[in-house]
Image (cartoon, rainbow, N blue to C red; front, top):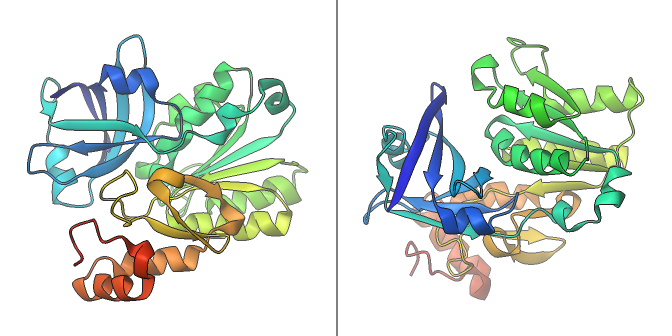
Length: 293
């Protein structure tokens, strides 16, 4: 059992939990995720590691209520427990493998969309702790969905906030801010990291390809098993089959087939769609998720 030592609501349908998970906290790195179950019969929910404290043995997760399981999870209070808290899973951000002195010479921009701010934060924090300041663009539909603003201000070199409806700071999408920084303010970037909804990452990649900025994305397709056994998170990257849970979640954004990923995510929601995926994907479909034959 894994104790919730902090439970905080960030907005109407987004909440944060600090969870006692010493082994996960000891080994996790920015970019990785965990799979959480409320009880023995609960749904397996993949969640990005938002932060961690190795000394306290805690891991921070941020959850958006979008279904029955996450709504039930949002009702848990400090002192209550998760049944399972499995991880760390996935590959750590490739930035932490790079030479620090080389990173200090790079101009890096992060683009976070909505809940994507949660997985962006630990990477920016890690870079800041190692003397690397980066620009961060945070976008959301409205002011109420802007999360971790103060935390991000403390670690970002420059923080740019934008809202689709103009209810906070400025009106527009993250791509509008990035285009303005490059084309009107003369910013030059060696790398972009984009994390958020698939459609947002797709349009960031279309822009950065035009601007000739290498781009990393963190893919968040449907995940069930989290260890590469079920095949639910199957992606096409540079024409090859990849699985986000074990090969990612980070990939070269200019090589990801976003249209296929979004189409597959929609198909996976229905029995007929899953049957068609099983038929068309053959051996790479796996079928171990329990939803297919």
